[in-house]
Structures are given as C-alpha cells and as structure tokens.
Image (cartoon, rainbow, N blue to C red; front, side):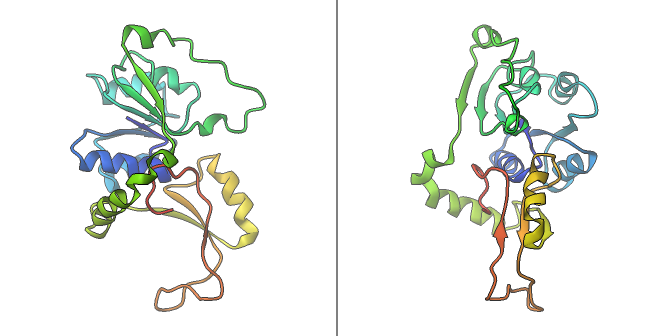
Length: 211
C-alpha cells in the first residue's frame, strides 16, 4: 500500500514493488492520478482519498489486509492506513507532506495501541542510509527503465519566474510524477541548449532514480 502514490517517489516505489511480484495498491488525490496509477504504472488497485473515507476504500481494495505500508503523506489517513483494521505489516515512513507547513504539530494517532496488538513495526526511510547500494540500484532500475518496464512522468512548468509556484504546487498536489521547472528550451533534436541546463524542483527523492 502506497500513499502519495502518484508523486515522484510513490509511483516509482510502487512500480518496483510490482516488478518484484507484489500486489500493489495506491492512494492519490484525483481521478486523473488514480487513472495514471492503474493504467500507466500497473497498480493492481488505486483510489482517490478525497472521494470517501480512506478506511472504507482501503478495505474495498484490500479486503484481506495489507502487508507493507509506504507513507509519504502522514496526517489523518495514517490512522486508517498504518494503524487501521487492515494493518498487519511493517510501515515504512518516507515523508509527511501533509504536515510540512503546519503552524503547530499535529496530534498523534488515536489508535497507536494497535501497534501492540498487531505487532507492527514502523521505521523511517532516509535515502542516505542506502548510498552504499547506489550502484546496485542504478543497474537494476536503469535496466527496468531502458526496457520500458518502469514508467516515468513529469509535470513540467516552464520558466524560472514560475519556480516558486511550482514548488508550492507540490504541497497542493498539482503534480503527477516529478515536478520539473524547465529553464532551457529543447532544440529540434530534443537536446537542451548548452547555455542553460534544466533544473528540477521536486518533492522527495528517496526512491526516485530520475532525480
């Protein structure tokens, strides 16, 4: 189960899980994003968390429960996903974008005791912990990408004058895949002009090989 699944990190992490034989479910914030997950990324199930109660939708997509929960969002849905009735698995926390700009800390989950009864494990994930396996990762993921097995999507905003809007847009879910600010126009051959490289602004990067 992947939250923030249509973002730069979530969609790649979900696709890698699928390539390794997992049944993959994701949640995202629009019908368009759900369609992207199902039709382009090959997720087995996906739902729009804004369309109804998260727990109800999660139980519909995973009636037998879930084994691993990968979270980029945090917030209220953590109670339904990571600690809810469907849980019986390790939780990997890669981010918490829903609370990055809060003026005061969010209250903790009210059902934290479920970790005891369900013997749950919750662990943070930081990309720097795995730098010793970078070459291995690039070989594996690069191979998938070149073979067309790993899909990549960008939301491109043109011009440095729109860079701040693009960055803020990350926190409002305005991107599908990586949010990119393009500073240089491509020439007719598809190459970038040498005098001005592309710059990237994106949310997260723990599982994203395209950063």
